[in-house]
Image (cartoon, rainbow, N blue to C red; front, side, top):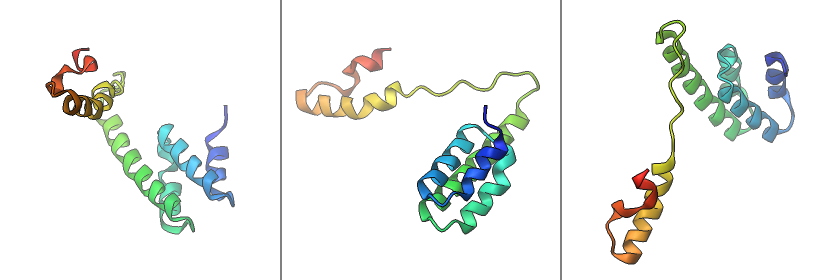
Length: 111
């Protein structure tokens, strides 16, 4: 397993794609320790997309940190959301338009 310091060191890579991937990885890992480093990336990175991603990652991590602090000790984290209905909605609308059927007749909506 890679140490957090090794991952943060990737933010100094000359490759902007690698820096973007590192920002995404730090957000996915919920690396609260990296918030200050991500703030610096959001302010100083030469790549605009990396700056935007870093700012979004900082906002996400700060929200996640507040939620983690408000959760009682020993409590399980909230379940990850499912996206079945969200993926179904555009297909359901298209199918309903094409067949003049009600939009609620999508087979995934019945799950």
